[in-house]
Length: 149
Ligand code: FES
Image 1 (tube, rainbow, N blue to C red):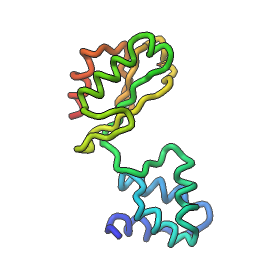
Image 2: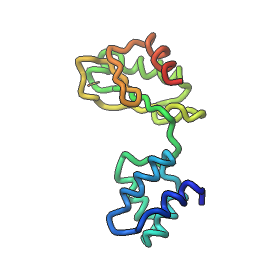
Image 3: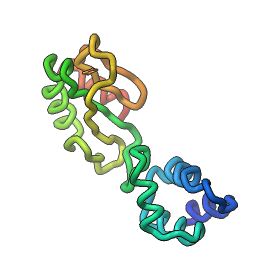
């Protein structure tokens, strides 16, 4: 077991109800929930691996593969779609060299699509980490992504 994982798991008293808290901590520290983490958590919590996985996979906040440092979300909701969202997505995919749902090889970026950010008046919209970029154009994609390199 990796030293960091052992460190995270060793400091906790295993009680009922701490599973989510531990999963959150592992993800925060390691960036994702590894197979090793699932199996080690199951052992310590004295529950099955499938129970741990079942709980973790229920929540969309948990990821099971390493994630990039920055997350780019492109809106493909109706308003953004009409205003050119698919073209923005293509430009981001081209710039990062990945498709939606993937992570760049250098683990700098994840790319996701969303159904609506709730700010349709600003469409088309992308969000990088927590920053909203409104009225996006394909030309702005490169300069915005460069800010996160
Ligand atoms: S459709 Fe994109 S923000 Fe609502």
